[in-house]
Length: 341
Ligand SMILES: [Zn+2]
Image 1 (tube, rainbow, N blue to C red):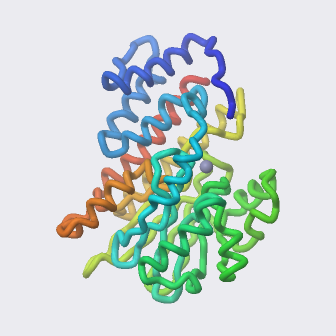
Image 2 (image 1 turned 45 degrees about the vertical axis):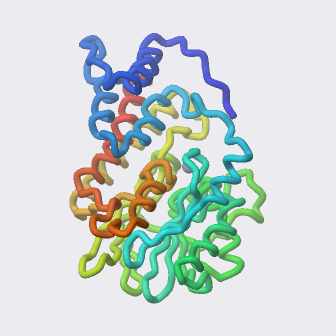
């Protein structure tokens, strides 16, 4: 883990202080001398977050200075909990959650779409959880892991591709990532035997159809060079639901500094702006994240399991609130950009 850098720049320390302030007392007041900069963007992010996306705000805005600020290593016991306490859930008629339990950032989500002609997974958790939870969750939900046909890996960090190689080897599942992300994975220092073998390449803007499902993929670099964000359709009784997933989240940028770091923030802002427009045009009214802490998976699924839970499905949050999730991330990235320009 990286240590927190000593903050020497007044403007940056303002940024960090404003982030902490806003956690305690609401959005920081606009400081005229800052113009439409750090404080402005914190305010926008805070307003977009509201209570629904506050965990996302909390993970991003106070960390524009150092993506690892305030992080402590996940205790072994918590890692165990994230696997042992995980509960699979049916979210809509053909969308299921088979991911981890804990709120820690390294706890990851895995989503299942049963298309009728095979299962499509979005993300495969960590190496210690993916090979356990995905098969277990599928069986709990009455689905056969043998039917896993395709796996979309939103970005090539180990907490999302961790189970991919296992499923590729065991079931012949096809793995899909963007070209930039396959390159990024190749540079990852992890043991090659733990990485999925190069397979299908997702192209920006393409639509992938299987059975009753349809996935539209957008290459949205920012968290990593080739992060893929997805809009897809699932069945909800007589209705169709459009689901949006923002494929990356944090501002780690592989430890980049100076202009390189600035460019990452810029890229992140541009990708978020584009994906917001895609969400608006699609009318998506459901947001799923790639970590259960970010979309309140555990709480939503617990509510769903109540007798009346399906009468007003907590996963349906409306198009404006789906846009607001990406807006929160975008405004935090814009704050980073303002702080480093
Ligand atoms: Zn990541």
